[in-house]
Amino acid sequence: MTILTPEEIIEHVKLITGDKYDSDLAKRLGVDKQSFPQYKNKKTIDIQQKIICLLISKLNEKNVNKT
Image (cartoon, rainbow, N blue to C red; front, top):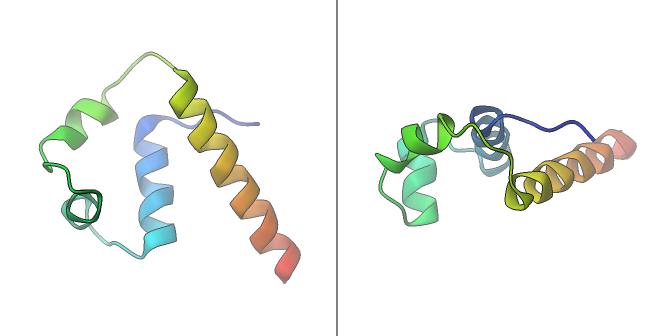
């Protein structure tokens, strides 16, 4: 499993949800858009980040197998 950076995670989630901008995703998540730069600059890898990466990986595998 590849560990994605927080910025890569946000971009993958925007692709999955169809959101174009960070502000669109922030609204969907019910968070302030100013929290995104803090998340993107996060340097430590925690279990939540690993779980998200695993889920994105599995979604990508599922989509590849559909075609």
